[in-house]
Image 1: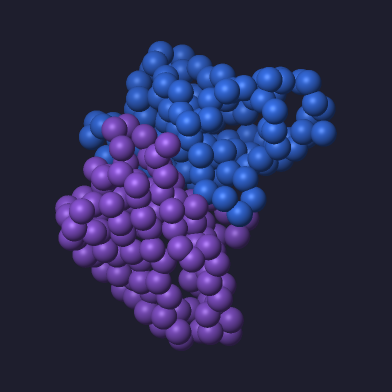
Image 2: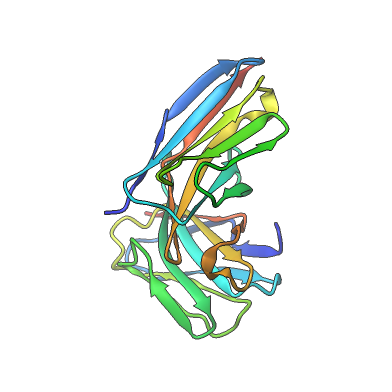
Length: 109
Length: 115
């Protein structure tokens, strides 16, 4: 079936270190979205990428959509304790979003 | 949060009982979604609705039912046929038009425990 995998599943970093999570789909996606879920909370939308090869930045966060529209990445520069949470990608196929398995980030102060 | 409310936050039920989870939004969104999240896992789509009086099965619809009689409301019933109902249930909505190409706004979720 349709799958969107994310790696790594967990990542522990020291505050100030960089962090990257990768999202890979078995099929081409119309677009890809990224969400952040704080512990005990609900997913909150971060960004949407639509075009092949698109790169977008939000302060310390950089998002990229692959040329084949099958993969994406989220990179955080100089992590802070407020970055703690689980990051999900969600790929759109027809009207349905296929969520990735998520990467849980812990930042050690 | 974001104009989407889910109630209750925690729900406990005995095995064999049907239970209905509430989801209400005042964002004037056409599309609404129900997801299930199990510990350490991603979100899996149960049902979605693009418009009033119409809904579609997601990837794990067995044992669940929904209705969409009003634009603002999309209740989910977890039936006794659902084999592993204990989970965190999230409702979401997205703006009109665009065929699902807009961001989803999530409610705070309902944590259901069935014993």
